[in-house]
Image 1 (cartoon, protein in one colour):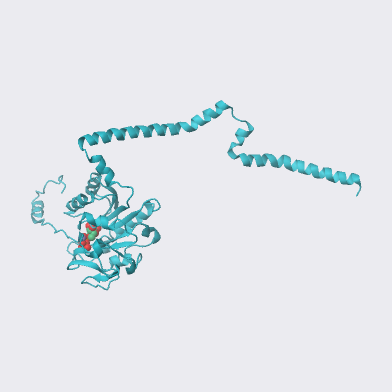
Image 2: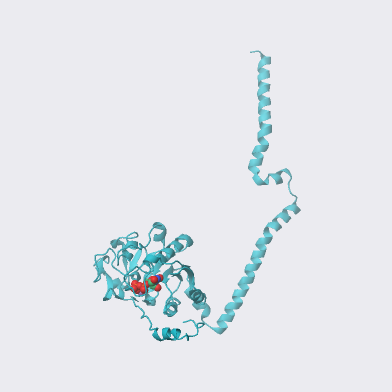
Length: 353
Ligand code: UDP
Ligand code: MN
């Protein structure tokens, strides 16, 4: 190859490299500077920069001012509150304690003459429980005004849901109370609501099924508060006995059930006898109550999906104390009311009972 030829090839290479660099460099620069490339091509002067920053900051500044205003308002309110009720602020702060798990109590409820009275009794208990969130689920096609208004003035943190029990499972007026499962789809709906709305990464919580007619001691809620998987305890006045309870062995583990009716059930206890950690709902996203479960097996239909007997955490002094009662409210006599209606003289319908 002659020197001239070599020089030509060399020149060709140089030209190719030059051309490639000429086209590639701007592309690299654009990528490297990304959205700022405009600034790179035509840099802003100092004043423009200040304007741009000021523009970005102005919504932040507005938010900051807004927050300041809220803070001032809160201070004024707490001073006013303290003047009226000296311990109110401390009380509220004590009720909302960020350092302890929230108790999510799920209550199915249905319209009947005693409903409001039951809800009043429950509220009077729940208002004393720290970090408490009530999930009240109406067995109804819609959320009734009675329950809606009741919750709004209850002073509790709450979620109001509704779902009607399928017709073929719905109790008839004169059915014996054990004939059909009660509150099943309502509890399942609440479980799904928790799964969808509560982030377990930032919220520690315990889930408890609190029927609207039972009686709950305040101590019960502190027993369940720190539940790792599923905690259990006795329930008074249930299963035809003075109480039912888990049988706890020497090693502090649950061995079986003290119950008269089918003690061989996997979890022979009432709905009021256990609570579970919220995180189990995420761990077992399909766990739910089975409306087709045999009579007395509703609790077992759910719990067998979550824990084993050996993992249960006995509470209430190793299940020796009764802290919740499966009370049932007598159906009121309505004979005279019906007679008055028949006579065309019903009581004032504007009075809510
Ligand atoms: N419940 C309901 N729909 C019904 C019957 C009952 O939502 O048709 C609710 C009821 O308000 C209660 C729970 O389900 O919170 C359990 O019902 P109940 O107390 O009648 O059952 P039991 O005490 O006999 O197990
Ligand atoms: Mn009941």
